[in-house]
Length: 493
Ligand code: BG6
View (cartoon, protein in one colour):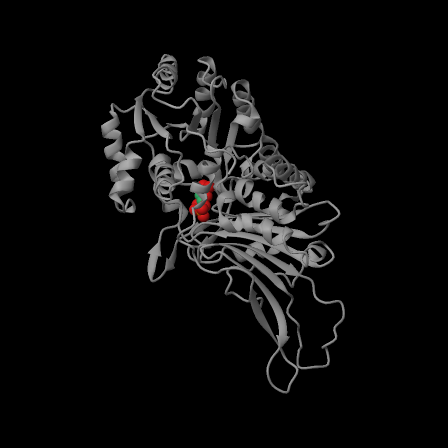
């Protein structure tokens, strides 16, 4: 632990969906795990005419059955306070300043959590700066923001300039909740705590890498946000590129936040830029059509509530990237994500090359399958190696055996990703948060694709709901022998 000082957790947008669905449950989870500092208080900032008591009642009803222990729930509710204000009104901020720092009721270590529209990030940070709530006199100040960090490179740049006017980079925590997932962090342990992997972890032995996040759910009630974003921005620019950096990075000088982030940035900077003329060869997009899942007909994206009639927003995106450095040159990294796919699963699949000699050509082993390492992130956390062994019996036949290098299954007692990240904010540990240069380089990778897709708005491929996506995406593969690995169970064909 770095430090566990008392602090005041101010939530802008306290009455909204993010607060209800993610933030409050995560803070409650930390409470019940006994991980919150005793003097931590939570101030909800919102427009509603709520008193502390009404806000506490709301939180009780949000938590519902999740809050199994009445004593823990009451302890948690006693931490809650409500400050009424409209974040667009300048006059609110001096009052907020006095409320937080003038009453002696709250710790002067302040966390400002932006559970609000990204368009308001800059507005709030400016006003906090205006009244001096950014200045670290008598306590620290931290600003937490959620993706999307901009809409493209240009808007990310301008958002960053606005935040940087009032907050130092070391005060800003950009959350990518994927980085809080246990197996994501395990990628680093797996790679750098096991000597036997390092000699193999490069272009000499690895054929290609696949990073897949598939979801069986559709866009649900989020079309308002999603239709303007699409799968490439929503998942690939952020979560999947972060995963790629962990799989591909060099060992950092140490595990401190800056060393880690320096190495991640080096990977992003080494990704071969995609010229606009190559976008169609390196990226593929599609949209889910209706389909039958478990005997039930599900609507296509265009039939979902609030989706514009002729939308060509992609709900599926696949990308082929090359990292031009000594370790990875010419090894394809395939990144893929989709909504309403056959199953929800997230996995990094690393395929090794075939052995150089066809030693078994004259035997019953007609075609030797390559080795794979599968790092499954969810729903099961699992690291698995697939190797070839001889089948029992007199004949020389091979079969795939699977070595589970870690645990499979879901560990309920662990902190979830969100909880782990909130704890890091409270402790001031930046390791799992994005530095601005990471965000900016990730936008540089996808920007040419976004530009071309924004111009080509007359057609988009579709895939049936409940499928593994459009077969046309196979055209990204550089060799015929390459195939998508969808889940742990699904074998190399
Ligand atoms: C979010 C995206 O960042 O990540 C969602 O906006 C996506 O569209 C989600 O569903 C996936 O994360 P998880 O942790 O729910 O698998």
